[in-house]
Length: 160
Image 1 (spheres, rainbow, N blue to C red):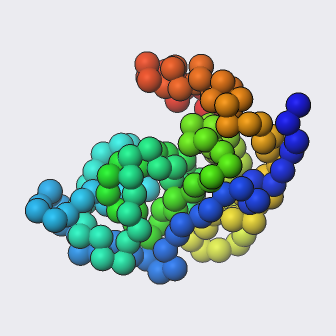
Image 2 (spheres, one colour):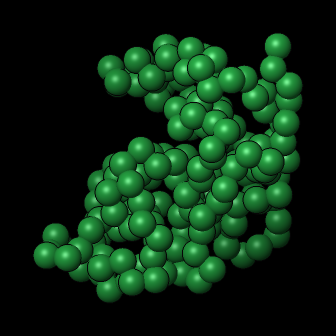
């Protein structure tokens, strides 16, 4: 059996210190990539493109979480830039699929505001304090293999 650790011990969170979305346009243009915002996480549709000024780059498969406003939505990135209301979560100790499904399993808890702010913000302390099992990378792949297969067939999202 694998030991339990706090999630914050094994993840890195990449978020904007200020709301950045660069110069945005409403349709694709040369030198512009999709702006990955909360709307994209919820619908998968791109509404804006940006030159990426003041934004963090996002690659296909990166794990993203909405951090401001509509909080706690977990999704995967595409090639583009993340906006100020989205954060990227990564880990060298957790496989991407394992981390994604761990976070997905906590999505409803992460959506609950834990402060009295006018605009809800993700509670990073709560996220980092989550106790998780830390199996080997090989075992992580075995654990999530059925979910990855189901997700490829379009059915895994209904499990969360």
